[in-house]
Image 1: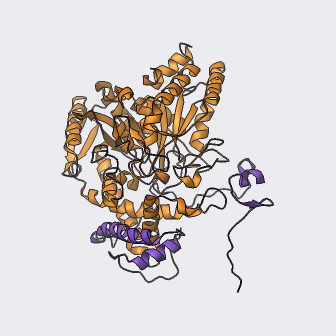
Image 2: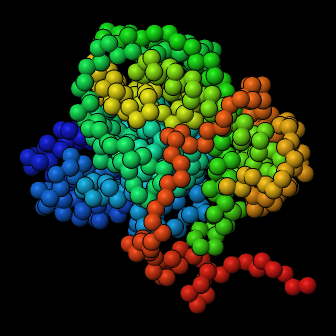
Image 3: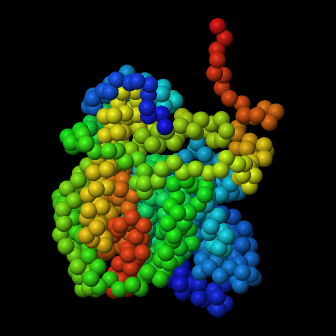
Length: 472
Length: 113
């Protein structure tokens, strides 16, 4: 099927009129109609006729849309405002909310001619690691229907794995792009804080939120990031640093690249299957010319506590605006998990406790930054697991706040420091469940991660595998 | 951010969250919670607070806190109206459930004596 092909190939075929965008979009809708009833990755499917109309328009005016993303169908996590298409953040509070303006990322993709076909399931307001805390029914993992698709962006990841679309846009506050990538066998880039505009993205925790691409490969993510990255006057925290060509960085040699391997990350908390798979990947990087060295990152265990002070505190403030007056429904419709986080955050920020919790966490955040800065002055990337566990079975992470938090062990630290991280598939268990690893790089050095990821994917084929939906 | 309160007495991190704390916090957070929820939240928020309190063991006396990881501060723009981002009254009210004569209807704030 066409959605199996990389963006580079699709773009070429579209340019040469070997295929049409109409054909590609129609194929995606056929698959959605056949299989998403089971997977439930979409909250809102864009009207098929409208998407086809847009595809026909792009086909007819191809010369005015030179972008490789022109005519390519994509999805967005339902945390992005899309003018005219409902945005819910997976919460009944916004069940009927139609945004009067578009997020910058959506606008940029519209401008280059990419075709939005859906708004995707997630944990409501981004709160969770399993897309179970949603008001729109759980998303099933296409690799095993009794398991979670990860979270909070389980919907976009499951849709890419299921070939319902070619790429997706996620939002990563503590792992919401990377965790579902690992659990669905797809590739995803969590960008440096400020690399992509947050304008029009529903805020979870403002000092941690990042917007990024999810797709089948590092190469595809590079194409998408090139289109969405950059300064935006509407987001004061977006960076003015120039955006390099990520697609040109893909084929840069990785010979002599230095990769750090933090031994603390590979202890008892980590599923042995994932550890084994990453050790094999480590050898592949060495074979491809990189140097991998054992290092120590002793702060690891403090990452989750820092995150679970900062994120709930910031979300308690951000979600304060949802009072049902100007838009949406009342606050009684927050999920249990939303309430837990809002309550924890309000507690941490309440009179007298600010220094003991929020300020303390911000100080430990500085310690993390120092530790990572030192390490990344000596190394080009850090090789880390994405999740300590395999895709969870439904119910496993619900109502156990500590277990739920520990699923984020390896991902949240990256957000605390603001670094970029590329999550890539690195193997399957005997039960055919996918596993992922992440390469964490220096601030604004997504390019090196793309080069490393692309080099790995040239000599492995995990990323080419897709689930057999007929049996799911 | 509702972080800094006027002259609060700094309190030590504590690991016991009481039912009264939860009811107070729910009022601050404007969350309508039932008795059952209050009990459950006391346990769960208490568990989370106890867990995150392990940070207290890290010495940070001479560490400055970080709130912005890319080092930006005070980003300004001209104080000018950007008409391209203005809503019409109709657009601004389009998602409101309760409007009156082109205004949002809000709950009563002041009460009669």
